[in-house]
Image (cartoon, rainbow, N blue to C red):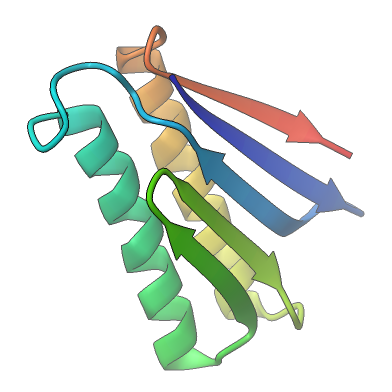
Length: 102
């Protein structure tokens, strides 16, 4: 199962951690893992290309996004990432879980 941890302060995202594998299908054929990876990396690349206000780690089965500077760009794009992940969770509840942490 993919576990997503969203950390907010004052209702603003300051960190998102995505870890694990969906186990929906074999490695390389897993559409849930592919969707999560695509959403996260696209969000990271967009934020970095627009204002470089985040730092990130990307290792096999682990992505961590950390906000360095609160900007409108990263706020909108990170909230969009969370909404997309929530929609995916509705379709694949056995394969992805999102937790909001303080």
